[in-house]
Amino acid sequence: MARRLCRLPRLLLPLAAAPKHQPRLPAIPALNPSPAARLRPSSSPTPTPSLPAFPRLFSSSSAGDSSMVVVGSADSYEDIHAKVQAEKLPAVFYYTAVWCGPCRAMAPVIEKMSRQYPKIPVYKVDIDMEGLGTRLSNLKIFSIPTFHFYHKGEKSSEVVGADVKKLEAAMESLHK
Figure (cartoon, rainbow, N blue to C red):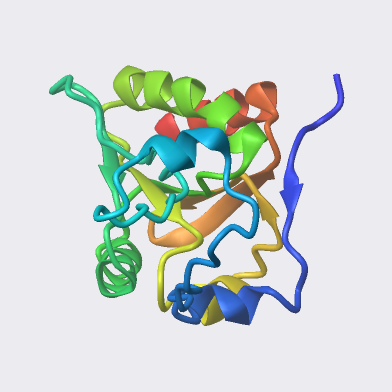
């Protein structure tokens, strides 16, 4: 079975830290309005259509036995990463994005593993988080999903792509 992953262009990684604010363009009036538009009262302004927001797939589990932790900011990521290294804790960092299809396919798998191994925290990191781009390029994360496994504060292994068997093997070796 082929490994599924999303590649990140190296040039775009620093842009992940850039603000995502885009100016709204003014509405352009229709030159030839539809018949339905003529039936509307002219006193009410036409609402500008907005794009639907993508649902965030980074919610933590409602079950109490899951060890999944959703990292909410670049500062908290730095704090967690430093704590794992300083206290020599076992941990898994799961780098993902909402728009990544293989990441969405791996979400139930990693959620199940976080319940199966509750003593190993899984930190779910959204790569599109503001202020994280430089850190990701320093860690050489160029494809997602990427899983970093830490044992005794050191990175012991890495799984890149949606490879369930490699992920299970790495998690089992970390558990031992």
